Structure formats: structure tokens, C-alpha cells
Length: 260
Image (cartoon, rainbow, N blue to C red):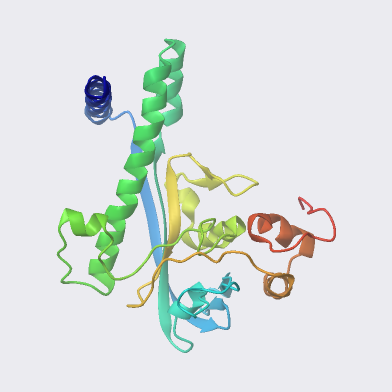
């Protein structure tokens, strides 16, 4: 029975793979989806836990780990930028232009299977575009001789990281607004909702850090002292900051977070 179940599962996986390849082929042949990207680089310098961009008159605000870590070091993304003269990059990519129309076509035909498959493929294509763009950026910026095999790329055995606002190393989704303004991301057809979700949905954005010791990490829970410092740096009302940081707060806010 166990072998029979395994064979059945393998057959379903093979069928799903074949269906995805067939739909992907149709998308490519008929140009049903469009992919676009925008990226940029800016002079930067670390100032405490902020990353100042002197030419832009803006700053990227980062958060520092407060909980005990296995390394004994409490990181912030600003640690990967020099305090005098350095640079960071940023990007936004999408493979979702046309997804809405294609999904609507399948739904009119009551074909929920291919509607869901379209969304999944668009998500994977967006991630692939982000990976390809990062490779080109590394080669043009600080790793001109990089020549990694596919397995090494998958294992992220390259120098540099591309953390995204809203993810563990920079958990504040509202930082996307600064990134999108710097990039002029709307030129690529990518916009932000009032809650800082990206549209089209099959979109990816983030920063480029080139420091040879840059690595991904999780900020984790933070206390009120750091939130107050972060609020001062962002110059926003405390309830607004607490709203965006709610998932990582190590305390209960004194008042309900505001939406404004």
C-alpha cells in the first residue's frame, strides 16, 4: 500500500509538472505575461542604525536585534554599510503584468486549476527575474568574475544579499515607500497599496548590499526602547510605528495602533 501511494503521488507530481510546462509554453509563445524591472544605486553611509543617502536627502531605517543571539552579535542591516563612503542598491521587479487578464479568462471558463497555476507561475517567474537581475548587478558592481553553477546560485554562494522590506532582516513594510520613491518603481508598472503590498502581486523588491560579510538574519522581538528610537528616526506617531512593527513587538502597545 505504501509503494502504491508513493507511485500515485509521483504520478500526480509528474502531471502537475507537465501541466505547468504546457501553460508556461503557452504564456511564452503568446506573450501573455510581461516582466519588467527597475534598479538603482546610491551613495550611502551608516549613521547609527540608519543608512543615509546623502545625494537623495533620504535614509533607509533599519532595526537591530535585541534578543540574545547564538553569535553574541546583535545585527542591523546598517552594519553592512561603511560610516564614511559606501553604496547600496535597490530593485523592484514584476512578472505579473497580464496575470489579471489571463486569470479572468480561465475563471470565465470555470478553469480554476489553470487560474491558480497562472498565479503560481507568475510568482516563480518574478523570483527568477530577481535572481537573474541580482547576478547581473553583482557582475557589474563588485564581482565581475563571478561564474557560479546553478546549484551554487540556488545555495546563494555568492557575495552580497538582497533583503526585502517586510522580511525578517527589515520587517517594516512601510520602508517600501522610500525604496519605491528612490527607484521610481511605477515606471515599471509596480505600485504600492495603502498597506504597502505590491501590485501586481507577482512582484519582488528589496535592497542590494555588497559587504563581503553581509548575511541574512532575523531581527526578532524588539522592546519599547528601540521602537521609540525608531519612531524618532522615522518622525512618525508612535501608534503608526507600532502598527507596522506589531508582529515583532516584545510588549503590548499602550494604545491601539492607528491607521494614519
